[in-house]
Image (cartoon, rainbow, N blue to C red):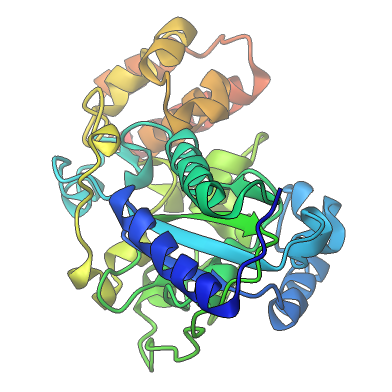
Length: 359
C-alpha cells in the first residue's frame, strides 16, 4: 500500500532517486510533469505532413504518445534517465566513412541491445523507490511504447532538442540513450531545459547526406538514412541509394559534426563495447553472412531487428557505391538469384552501378 509522504519527504525521495540513478550507472536523472501540449502540436504537424513515412505506429497510438496519463493511467510524473553509449574501443566513424570498402554501422548498435539493459535498471530504480513508498503505480519505457522521450527529457532538465532533433546536453553531447519511468508519485519536478544552445550553427543540417533535416528540429524520416536502412522494409528509393554511401545500419553524420559532442564521453558499460569487429567491417565479408550467421552474430544486438533480408539489401546498396572492381561484382553475383525479390532488386542495381563505373 502506498505510504502517505509529506512534501518534505517527497523532496528527499527525489534527491534519493537521483542518487540511486547514478549508483545504477545512469549519467543523469531528472523529473518532469506530463504537460506536453507544445510538443504534441509539433508531433501532429509532423504526422500530418506524412514525414513518418511507413512508420504507421507513430500515428496509430493517437494522443497517448504526447499525453502520458492516457498511456499509463494515473501518471503524474516522469523520471527520465540518460546513459552514455559511445564505445571507447571502436574505429573512428570518420575513418570508416572515408573507406567505401568498409561498412558503417551506427555507434549505438556496436554492442548489446540497450533496451533490456536500461529497462532492467529502471526496474531496479522502481524497486528502490517502492522500498520507501510501498507499492506504487509505475511503468518503465525504453523505446518500447509511444513515448515522447526527448520532450520529456528536456522537461526533466537533461538537455535541449537540437536542430537534428536529438537531445543535447551542454557537457555530454548527444551520444546517450534515454529511458523513462512513468509514476503516480507527486514528486517535485526539475527545471525544464528551455534554452537552446544551437545558436546559428546549422552544421547538422548541411552535412546530412540526404538533406533529411528540412528545418530546425524537423526531420523528414522518408529521407533519413536511419529510416531507410532500419525502419523501411521495402525498396530503398533510387534517388537516395547513391547518397547512402557505405552506411548499412543507421547514420551518425549529424552527431559526428555537432560541436557539442566534443564534450561527449565514452561509455563505461562493458555491454556497449564493440562486438564481432562491427566498428569497421569489410562490406564483402558481411555480405557473405548466411541467415544463420546473421542470427548468431547479431544475437543480443539491436541490429537483429532488421532481419537478414534488409541486411543484404543495405549491403548491396553499399557495394554498389563502393570502388568498382571484380571482388565487389563477384560478391554481388552470389546473391543475384536470392529468393527475396527485394534483395535481387538491390543487387541488380548495385551490379549495374559498378559496371557503369568500370566501363
